[in-house]
Amino acid sequence: MKHVKQIVNPVLAGFYPDPSICRVDDDFYMVTSSFSFFPGVPVFHSRDLIHWEQLGHVLSRPEQLPTNMRKISGGIYAPTLRYHDGVFYMITTNVDYGGDIVCTATDPAGPWSNPVVVEHAPGIDPSLFFDDDGQCWMCGNDWSRGYAVIWVAPFDVKTLSLAGERTDLWRGAMHDAWAPEAPHIYRKDGWYYLMIAEGGTEFFHSVTIARSKNITGKYVGYRGNPILTHRHLGQMYPISNTGHADLVQLKDGSWYMVMLASRPYGGYHLNLGRETFITPVDFSGDWPVVNPGMGHVDFACPAPDLPEHVFPQEDPDDFRAMCWNYLGTPAPDGDPVKVESGNRLGIRCTRAPLIPSSPNEGVEITGRALGFYGRRQQHMVCQAQVKAVLPEGPGTSCGLVVLQHDFASLRLEMAWRDGQSVVRAVRAFRQGKEGEWVQQVLAEQVCGQEEVLTLCAQEQEWTLSVGERVVATANGGFMGSESCGGFVGAYLGMFASGNGEERQDYAYFEDFTYTGIR
Image (cartoon, rainbow, N blue to C red; front, side, top):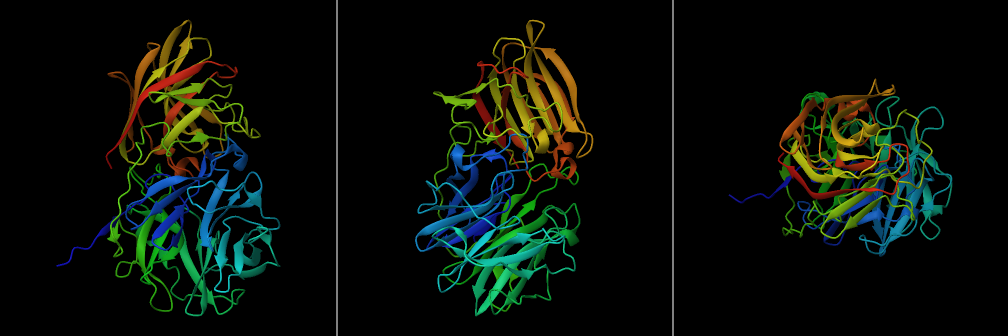
């Protein structure tokens, strides 16, 4: 019996939502949303759909990506990646600054151009489609009329602007569909297929499809919609919230779909955020059948008949690796983070505290990054450990934190109090998604100025330790997006702050390790 190669899902574990994929000859490229983390829009590469390497980011220079360090779920929403005639196009929405923007590159690893704002393009989740005659079209969604509708307009690739009037296409498969978005157009067998997401990006998420003989319509929805959803499987199904998908056709004519999904654990808690999954699609008939014979996304699926290609991997514990991010955009003359030789990280004790004192503190700050440097939590069972050195002086603090939307977090914080260094285990949360902040000190101990800090998760049970001493334990279920809101997943990282005072002192971190089990 012939061995069937398998793709193991998620192909991008942790907070990698809204995937978009394209193929160029034997190579596959994919991008995902990044919200207010910098650099923005990570770019991935594969040759077999099994193994992926990160090439870089589209938005890697501060001038490309204004973001707000106090709006984690702002910034970059839902990029689309397309290739035509030697040029890669990435189109997305910066929901805080500029609206829909387009960048181009001849090499997906970069450099990418500075963004061009697309005027008169309402909504979010823009996409580009190149027709057989070379004409480019842009589609998006419009919420301005009291309901949402998918639209399309001709697009000029020379000026990166709309080149004609917008035409409304479809309002979704369901009557008064909630959140029709994430539109992509494909052409097959003389038909234009419009695939979208609807139902919202959590439990009721779904993928639906319609088609027309003309790109501007009329589009008729598939009677078998939705072509993908997991809402009928219940909240505790191990893969939930499937939606926001993109299709790619292989050289042999077969099709695959990438989509976002979440892995709930410890209850319906989505701490890891929305991750990237993949599954085969049978598109031999009039309409696509997702994962034929199964009808839903699984943790393993048949891989295409392509040569297996494994890439050399970066050391993710190296602070220079591409998995590391700022929160907010560093100012060109005020980068709060520096990586020194020997993989030593310095974070300046900037004025802004890690947790705002009120929900609106700093919401207008742009061009500045928080004193934070982190990477995605990618496993339910994991451990992050680092040696931290607290700079001497009143008001300074630093530590290790697991951070979610709007700063819901667990942290080990070293700080000065009454002339001595102490370590606190702190749980920060809101009273409801829009309520006031609460910072609950779980424990406090005297510590040294240099300590090894450890955060360890056994699913939702977290242990916070200093050296060999357990300082506190806590349940992390409150850090799921279903509890604290927003669209991101948990980050593990280091922080430093002057807590209201702009200081030039640096906290230093060495010997960072992240270990993930499952």
